[in-house]
Image (cartoon, rainbow over all chains, first blue to last red; front, top):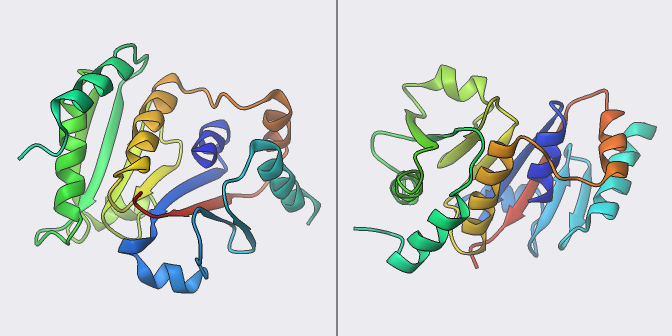
Length: 65
Length: 141
């Protein structure tokens, strides 16, 4: 849900909710052991529910690159 | 057969009673519908029937490849929740259980067109220069 809020906030952000049982190849690809699992730009992986400040810290890492 | 019982239909109707802008569900399935494609399409059609601000466009993932590509849809079942513009909100797989709540919240969010994020978050997001793709993997619970 937070990811979808981000998508509304910025035209640069695209946010997918993926039901992993229906796409088992993605579970393997992204090493989904527990849910929710958030993957940002294929590089940042976060396990578990993500509070807004924490997700912002992770997005902030993208700005530093 | 209805997927939503009367109690849920009434609750959803209430939640969607004050929608600001119209919202369109762009549903992607295929001619021989995959296991959850049919259920997803039927569920979305049922939800759309609960508010006159909601509409559904059903696309064939194969025949309408151009539309799918333009929306970045790369697997099905898929639903793009589109408001005054396409905000980039996608749901892959059937939005059931907890994710049904996400679907309804998405409708409200897109209709409002405001993220509701904290001011500090908005500031940070405004600094982004490059596209960001966020994928949240969930299971039906």
